[in-house]
Amino acid sequence: MIHVREKMALLLVPLFLGVAAPDVRAETASAPAGFYRLGCRGNSDTIVSIPFSRPATNSSRVESIAGSVVTVSGTPGWLVNQFVYVSGTQSNTYYVRFLSSAKEGSYYPVVANGDNSLTLSLGGDDISSVTNGTRLSVIPYWTLGTAFPGGKGVIATALSFSRKTEVMIPNVNGVGINLSPGSPYYFLTNVNFPNGIWQQAGASPTNKNDDVLLPDNYFIVRNNTASSTVFTARGSVPISRLTVPLAAENFTKQDNFVALTRPATNTLNESGLIQSGAFLGSPTTFSRTDELLVFNNEVAAKNKAPSARYFYLSPSNTWCQVGSGTTDMGNQPVFTPGTGFIIRKQTNAVSSLWSNLPNY
Image 1: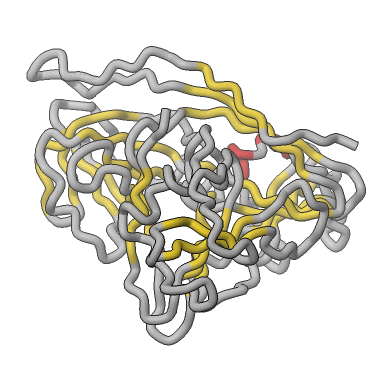
Image 2: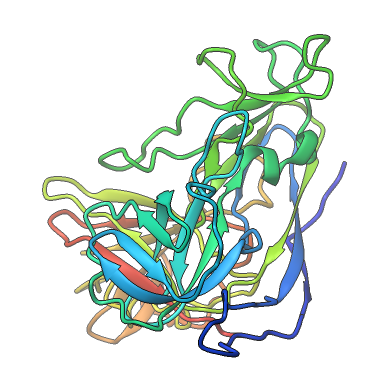
C-alpha cells in the first residue's frame, strides 16, 4: 500500500520585480517554485489543496482603474481576449491577483481583455482603492486537466457506474453547514477515450478537463478501491499576502471550505485569522462563536468527520481546542501544506476577509 505523508521540496529561484524604463512592456518575474506530494489512501476520502499557483502568464503594474477595468502600464502586447476561456481553443481560465496596495492578495476572474486592459468579475467588490503602480499577476486557474495531467494521481475508470477514483468539489455556493459536495468527477479511459477524459457523474458526457479548481478552496479525492494513489503538484510559490473571503449568513451558521495556497506550515497564531478580524472570538468554552474544523488524512474513512475543532477564547486571548479546556493551542501547526479545512461562521456574523501573510 502506498503511504506518503505531505512532502514538499521548495526550489528557490531568484526573484526580480521592477520597471527598467518608462516604456517597459511588462514586469518580468521569476517566482520561487516547488513541488508537493500527498498520499491518498485506498477506500478513503483525502482532503486536498494545491499549495502553489500555476506560473503567472504576465506580471504588470496598474496604470488606472475604471470600475471593473484595469489598465496596465506599458504595452504588454496582449491579443484581445487572449485570457478568455474558449472551449476547444483556449483551455485556460485566468484570474488577476493584486500583489500590493489596498487589495493585496485578492483575486478576481478575468472576463475580457484588451491589448493593455483587463476586465474583471468583481462579485460585488470594489477595487477603486487600488492605486496606480500596484503590482498584479495574470494567472491561469488550476483545472482538473492540469492538476491531474493525463489522469496522473487517480485510478482511471472504464465504466461510469463503477468509478475507481472520484474528485469532489465542496458546495462553495451553498447556504448552511454540513453541505454535501457537488456531483463527483472521474477520469474515464476506454476504447472511445484511450487517452482519458474527465467526466462528471450525472452530467452530459462532455469533456470536463477545463473545469476550474479555485485557489482558496480544497477538493476531495475519494478512492473507491483498496489501492492508494499519490497526488503531485508543481507550481509557483505565492510571495504576497493572501486574502480569503469568508461568507456568513443572517439566519444560519455558514461553512466555508477553505485552503491556504502556501507550501509552508502555519500555526494558529501565524494564520492571521484573528489579526485580520476574519474569525470571531468566543466568550466561553461552551458558548463558541466561530469554529475551525480540521481533518486527519492519515485516517482512512469516507465522509469523514473533523478530527479537531478550534476556537478563539476572547477572555484569555488564546486558541483552544474543543475537549481540551483552556489549554493554549496557538502554536499548534494546524495549517499544513496541501490540506483543507472548514471555517464555520456564526449566525448573524458579517462576511469577512481573512488576510494571511507569508511566514517564509
